[in-house]
Length: 91
Image (tube, rainbow, N blue to C red; front, side, top):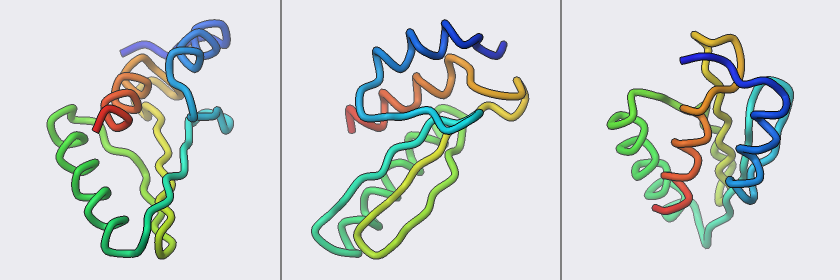
């Protein structure tokens, strides 16, 4: 998968609300009622990631889960990152 240029990233971000660019990644933080809900969300993300063959970096801080996506093979952001981000948002 090829890396998106800045214009491609900007366009994809427009279709992926609540995610923000952080250098060569996109990130989003989700907040939950408690740690148990946060873990359940992480497990759902894990299932989506396995099906997509694309795995986010995951940071869990009690009830807050931050996901970061980048395509290492492409050396930055690709369409694959935004596809998984939208799938995660759909649940």
